[in-house]
Amino acid sequence: MSKSDIQIAREAKMKPIQEILDGVGVPDKAEAYSPISRYIAKIKLEYLEKFKEKKDGKLILVTAITPTPAGEGKTTTSVGLSDGLNKIGKKSIVCLREPSLGPSFGMKGGAAGGGYAQVVPMEQINLHFTGDFHAITSAHNLLSALIDNHIYWGNKLNIDVRRIVWKRVLDMNDRALRSININLGGVANGFPREDGFDITVASEIMAIFCLSNDLHDLENRIGNITVAYTRDKKPIYAKDLNAHGPMTVLLKDAIRPNVTQTLENNPAIIHGGPFANIAHGCNSVLATKTALKLSDYVVTEAGFGADLGAEKFLDIKCRKSDLKPSCVVIVATIRALKMHGGVAKDDLKNENVEALKKGLVNLERHVENVKKFGLPVAIAVNHFIKDTDDEVKALVDFCNKLGIKASLCTHWANGGEGTKELASHVADLCEKNEDKFKFLYESKMTLFKKIETIAKEIYRADEVIADTKIRDQLKSFEEAGYGELPICVAKTQYSFSTDPNLKGAPTGHSLPIREIRLSSGAEFIVVVCGAIMTMPGLPRVPAADSIKLNKKGEIEGLF
Image (cartoon, rainbow, N blue to C red; front, side, top):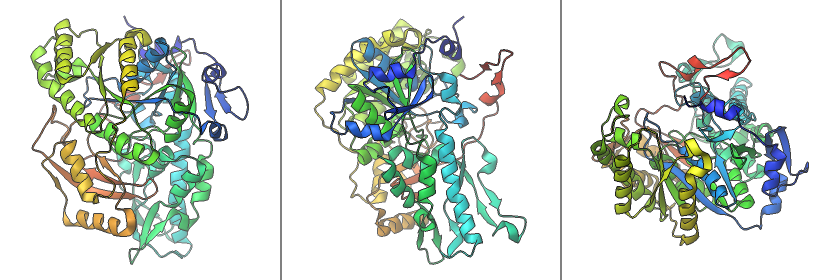
């Protein structure tokens, strides 16, 4: 019987964090970093200033096909690829997002990789870690408290309680909090109004946290958050409430990148964690830029499929930070492709080349989409033991016809040794990259045209459905000076469409816009489509059901 992820993680021979940092040239000095524990440290922003003039390494973006219950293994592959690069003599760091407690106790589970391609200490990473998410939650809710407090003490800014657009947040899936009434119970408790909660990873503070270049940038962006409007629709900003100062104070330590290690004792920077289905899905700019100064190759991931995470990484994160990937790796599994070809989850263990061939249209669509950004593509085939030789051959042959190399990867079982072929190919692509990177749309396009471009070019929708209210909102954002902001689409991750049941590569569908939100601090427009929720609920049988402490005081059930 194979060992569980948590068993493998517990058996890891971790090195003290100072050894890991010493390996990438960070000295064991108080001005360089602060140890959080024996195996975790936070790099100080002051120390990062020393690297401003140093040449950046190569940036590798790992994304995936459209996710299925069969699993794709994007984080596992990111870790395995970074280990593989180090195996072949390259100096590599993996940059990942921090896991949210919502999925850890919900449906998706932890996010520290798996098998012999993990980041450790796995339990701490999946549970609280360095407290960054708690700091983000507290900063966000401080702003909520200041809004209601301002109204209670006379409402000098004339905030219209019907037009407060700033919800509260919690880092847990809790559908009961999506829509609530607050300030009930009499005069002493304030003015009753409707409110609600989003999950912390959907917070604009999380987005700002991940897109800021330094503390000064962070404070400015927080100050520019639109929190409400007056009766005559004049915007009220966080800085009008003097909220940006204390909120930045709450985030001053969280904003420092976290350093841990892989099972093979290679450095890993894990920092920030917005979801890609409801936010922009990338780790922090600070983490990525730090890694680029400390290594020759940086492997980073973008959440869910390339239609969401990769598009947002390229059109939002890269646009705001001047980052340019040298290549993109698309992760696929034969199991998931068979599901896209119509096979039920319970039947995936059986060979089915025909279903695989049908499902390959999903991979092809993602390859086509990534190429629109002018970037070279590699395919990482995350190997499962039940994959047959004929299935692997069909996938490799298909990729060859596309002019793309597919590398069979066994990192789950073999760690970095199992990704050496992929690592060598990716390194070659990086060195040959002709810097043809381009955005999908220009900043000067109208907001609606940007939405249409994403819908038609990436999702292959025939049309965008938006009522007059939505279109008028977009026009008002443009008139207010936000017309050049990029678009952040919130939609289901399970399909190119807004229908999670439409697998493969659907066409002929529509993109219905339910709601739009201005993120004036993060500097993008959130477009909420279909039935997607910014506060998810727990599944019928949540992961929490099997998480407990055993008699030894060890955690069980965390995967």
